[in-house]
Image (cartoon, rainbow, N blue to C red; front, side, top):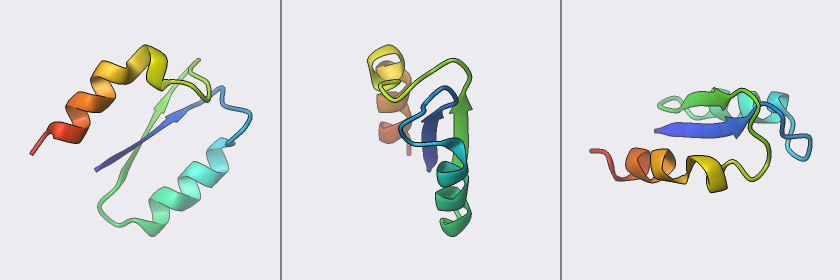
Length: 54
């Protein structure tokens, strides 16, 4: 499982995403430089592919 986070997201800062990932033993945090809170608009295809991967 991957957690997706935009590095430029000022509404949900990176330390919170790191804390969440640390609490989920199988999660990998994927930080996208330059992406903000609405990273799904620009990276939606990648995220959906990741969600449907076995």
